[in-house]
Amino acid sequence: MTDHFFDVPLDHARPGGERIRLYAREVVAAGRAREDLPWLVFLQGGPGFPAGRPVGRENWLDRALEEYRVLLLDQRGTGRSTPANRQTLPLRGTPEQQAAYLAHFRADSIVRDCEYIRPRLTGGRPWSVLGQSFGGFCAVSYLSYAPEGLAEVMITGGLPSLDGDADAVYRAAYPRMERKTLAHYARYPDDETVARRIAEHLAETEETLPDGSVLTVAAFQQLGILLGTGDGSHRLHYLLEDAFVPTAAGPRLSDAFGEQVAAVLSRTASPLYTLLHEAIYAQDGRATHWSAERVRAEFPQFERHFEPGGRFLFTGETVHPWMLETQPALRPLRRTAELLAEREGWTPLYDADRLARNTVPVAAAVYHDDLYVDTEHSLLTARSIAGLRTWVTDEYEHDGVRAGGRVVLDRLLGLVRDEV
Image (cartoon, rainbow, N blue to C red; front, side, top):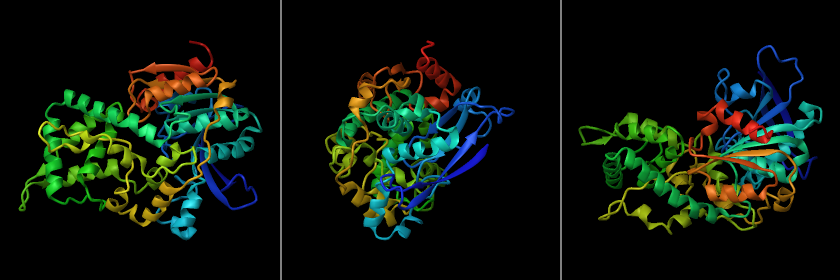
């Protein structure tokens, strides 16, 4: 493994202006470091998460290292790249200045970062891209605006809607959240009673997690984010069964439960996930205005936990303004987040006309009932990108490239090379 650092323009439209630092880790199979191998860039899901830190040849990396020199990119603002969090953003100045700064942290800028560093590593040759989730969104932006830099593209769980705004994304998402919750209860029927008991407790008693976050009923519902992964239903079940302990003040949520919940819900290490999550869908010039919060009101079943006949429903991958109060690490960034939610003038992230004329080999794994990315949106996009081949499967959930490891990447490579 080799560390690489690059100083790139904050705004690629102003190459002579301010610069930020990017970090990327080069990984090559033992004994092949001196070979002239093709490059594969891995674009992590998110937004706001660094590339994984591999321990040996784990999951998909094992297959990739058979023929590639792999680059694990910490996208701008994450990992060892110039950080953007509650500690560093005040250095930018006012919330207005912070929001203007973060407006340069979407997929279009990430693609331009890749194109900036590509010739410095490959000598100008195109490279391959593997995009997971939001990394797949970035890959579609790459196909839109810099296809000349691409040899082939593999996407897993990351085909975005080309023209759907955040409202459309969440209108499709809430029914999936309900469906995933009910499927979980079908697997673990007693969990609904436990979940309702926890919700009733939280409605009457303030509980603070070990990281200082206040666990509200709405925050507890967000544990449904686990239901989008292959083992997530089982993890949620085991988490719920250890919820309560007896205390001198009566039953309270256990420290063990609180620590596990904080590990799932905390955005201390990934504030950009909250700050920019809805901005990754904004490209029609309009502000997002806390889309997930507004659209949730159209699905009143998520509020009927205590009504006769109501079900306790978990939610999932959504961000809400109340998170900026309940999570201590987000409170200093509240006004910045509000300004990003109010921001207008977002530019297009995809070029439908250019995608319709695409000549880069592309393959995508579309997970049949993906909690995080709507399957119908993905398939519509797949039909809009010339030459793209899809593998639609319910063998895996959204984390298929991790859970399925080399199997998933091997299938995508076969598709992109027209070998299957």
